Amino acid sequence: MMTNHSEFSVRASGAGSMTHAETYLAQVGEISRLIDPRAVEDLARELAELRARGGRLFLLGVGGSAANSSHAVNDFRKLCGIEAYTPADNVSELTARTNDEGWDTVFAAWLRTSRAGANDAVFVLSVGGGDVERNISANIVQALDEAKTRGLKIFGVVGRDGGYTKKVGEHVVVIPTVDPAHVTPHTEAFQAVIWHCLVSHPKLRLQPTKWEGTALR
Image (cartoon, rainbow, N blue to C red; front, side, top):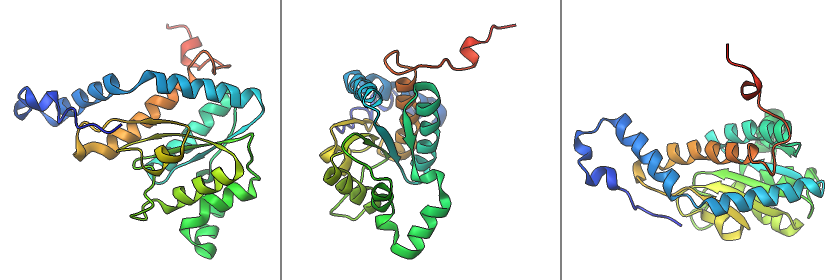
């Protein structure tokens, strides 16, 4: 679901007098209100089932979403005991495939080499989710086609209208658009909000985080 619901209540209530920080943070609050919590709960349930059947989780992202994928892999492995991987953690393979085979196929080839199968799932973190017609994030699009061929479930946290990820995925959280000028920072920021919600979910978390278990002094 894409919404410009809030070009937004902040602007309608005199945003001209607001600083950038005030506007941006108010938009963050609006996004939090608009996200469907049921979609996040569905993801938590699916990830718990993935772990129970011994499946692996493959996270895919580009740019800032690649860095988020790497962080999320750490959290899913350490806190939730889910076997998780991302191609962003192996820059040698990623650049070798890009150099020799082309950027568009790097993620699909990585899934094939990983022998990804129906027990596993792909988790896309992306601002646009991939676009076939405009050939945007073609590596994500081709990876999703590979995943569908191999029977993997497709999860995601994406922005805009969800793109190809939303079209072919089973459980995809779409970050609402409240300001077209801030789609990328809002989406990448809320990728972190959603995965941190997941790894702290009682259905998923097995290990406590350090500071919550440390007494204040």
